Length: 412
Ligand code: ADP
Ligand code: ASP
Ligand code: MG
Image (cartoon, rainbow, N blue to C red):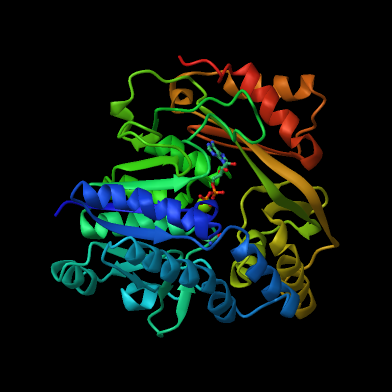
């Protein structure tokens, strides 16, 4: 039988009615003759609640226990989805990550998938099961403990299953009807794209567009998975939504194709660090050992042999970073004057493969921000993106102004 992977995000399984609606969508594909692997998220808000409980119990939590707690949301929806399908007379069975098994490395809370066992599920398909409902976001470590794949990780579960089982397509059902030029929730001129190149989607995702988890796009690109994003709230045709595909399949493209933002950024500066070889290595080894995900890095010009080292990381890792760096200082491994944290910043980025061959994009971006009175704190660039760190209160204004200036509401 041909096989489809269908993933339903949190809002698509937010209550029993929505689970029923999603199950009906699955039933349509089963009736067409597909076997289906359904990947489910936790009910919307559930994972946030679980993360909140963990933080309240233990601010510098043990990541193994974090995973034990936050993986539970998906277990509930997987069972409920299987029951709903059974009520519709569709032969279905639920699977938790360890039962599949979906094997990951031991990087708790950010684990990477290493292998998916296909035998057990395929054997059940062979016995007449039509739908395998799999709890997204979770796996099992080599030590036999439950792991999770990072926030938004059910997207990655879905793409990994599509690759492992050779699915015809991987459909990601969510609360918007596709990938837009920017988040339609903060910019009403955002335009839905029919197609987007893997590379652009990868940048947008890694820069904060949470419609797909970054790792899911990486996997789709590597294994050439036909990946589609579409709404679980509308009737769907085979052409609905946005197809994430090779650059060659897209005829026309703007220089800038999308604007992304990331709200929960923090900027930390180690003031007056000794400017000598090895100091950056010491700072960033200390941060990485503490599990801090550093993003942007800037080192100032040094004066009298001292310099300032600035970096950004997610707001919820600031405490971890402070404890780690101050610990390093107390041990005498590192010497700096003061550690200053600014937790009120956001990152705004413009993305487009057209930037490879077009100059002036950075200049235009900075001009637009300056015209809006927005001060830029940190800048980073790559071949196809430019990112700036700005005060969070200007984030939406910046996104809208850039969307207008690069005329993203118009197709090329
Ligand atoms: P799910 O729970 O289905 O996984 P998510 O909340 O993770 O859904 O992702 C969908 C959300 O992503 C949308 O509601 C939208 O606000 C946000 N989003 C951010 N950037 C974009 C974009 N460029 N296109 C579409 N949605 C976007
Ligand atoms: N429930 C998890 C989260 O909220 C995984 C997912 O929905 O993709 O991050
Ligand atoms: Mg998501």
